[in-house]
Every structure is written in structure tokens, then in C-alpha cells.
Amino acid sequence: MELDLLTLGLLALAALLAGFIDAIAGGGGLITVPALLATGMPPTMALATNKLQSSFGSFSATFYYLRRGLIDWRTMKWAVACTFIGSMIGTLLVQRIDASLLQKVLPFLLAAFALYFLFSPRVGDEDRQRRLGIIPFALLIGTGVGFYDGFFGPGTGSFFALGFIALAGFSMAKATAHTKLLNFTSNIASLLFFILGGQVVWVAGLSMALGQFVGARLGSNMVVTRGTRIIKPMLVTVSLVMSVRLLWQQYPAWFAWVPL
Image 1 (cartoon, rainbow, N blue to C red):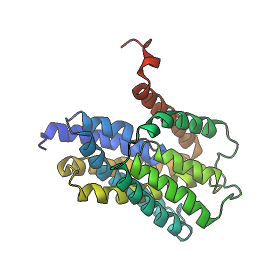
Image 2 (cartoon, rainbow, N blue to C red):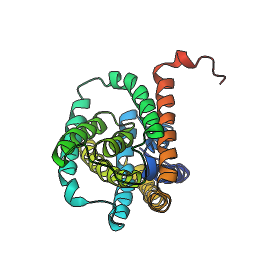
Image 3 (tube, one colour):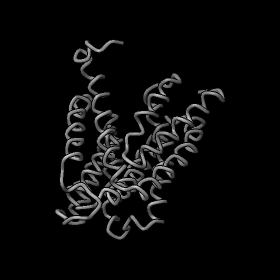
């Protein structure tokens, strides 16, 4: 698929903004997937190319958080392994099973997550008591959310963040850092199978990768310097925006009153 320089530049700018948002709260796909679809790409190619460019953003954020000491690799190795396996299984399965049921349920889950992040006293700047051990957490959250990301995808960052805050007792900043590590893991696992299927548009994906890398670095720095003051509002906002967008797609009759 051939794209002109102007289109590639606009895709890179969209990726920069998405990378910034993704590093803080996730949901950058709300920007990049529609941008890729607007070029005329088939949906499968758009999703595959999005995995390529988002892998650069999640890597940039993860590397930054590692250097800042916000990620404890020793306790995350099991979660990383389970996330990789879960994402691989999800990517293989989505090619054989209809994901329409998840599309219908997801908006309500995201709205519930937004309310949790907004009102839960467990969401803050300090770590709290861990409710789930390292290996059970890896099996439940790593495998489960990794599978979901490979199978469907939207809201993956919210699922990971919720798991780290509610079950691992992490602070907002620590949960965000570890979320990007598992996001990067699931992105890479899913991307490998898209590459094997020949679905990636490399020129577009690599053009967007630069914007993603820079945007993710800027967003990661914002998390380190401002913490909960920016993460919590962004998580709530992104979760609600994703919820409304998906509701609009799945239940258009509910929005018939909205002037277009």
C-alpha cells in the first residue's frame, strides 16, 4: 500500500499525541486506529500496523520507567511470561472466533473502571497491601489481560492498571509504569503473528513509530513529575471516552438525538 509524504507526516503527528496519552493512561488507539483507517487501509492491516507503532511507544515508556526505578523486574518476570502467552493465544483465537460479544460488553466495563478510578480510596500516591501473590497475579491478570489484548484490545491499559491497583496494591504511578511493561509484552506477542500473516504496512508503521517514541517519552516524564494529579484524571477521561465511542458504534440508536 502506497502513502504520500503528507499522509505519513500526519500519521506521525497522530502517533505522537497517542504515545503521550498512552504513556499516562492508555487509550492511544482511539487516535491511531481511526487515523490508519482514514488512509483506506483494511481493518486487519490497520490493527496490525497499529500494533507495530504502539510497540515503539510502549517500549519507550517502559525503558524510561525502568531507568527511573519504577519497575521491579524481579517480581514481574512471571507476569511478563504469562502476558506473552496469553496474547499469543488471543491473537490465534481471534482469527477463528467472532469478537462481537466483547464489543457489546466492553463499553460498560470501561465506564465501571472510570467510576472505580474516580471514587476508590485505594487509588492514590502510596502503595497499599497486596491482595494477590506474584504468581496468582501473573496467571490471572497477565494471562487474562494478555489474552484480551491479543483477541480484541481496546481498554487493555485500563484492565492492567485496575489489576495493579486493586490486586497488587500499587500506587497510581507504579501501576502506570508496570502497565506499560505488560502492554509492551502483549503488543510484541500480537505483532509477531500479524507479521507472520503479512498484515503490517511497514512504511506507515515505522513513520508513526518515531512519533510514538517521542510522545511516550514526554508522557512518561509527566507521570514521574506529576503522579496522581495527572494520571487519575487521564485514566477516568480516557476510560469514559472509550466507553462512549464504543457505545456509539454498538448502539447507534441510543445517540439518535445527538445533532450531527
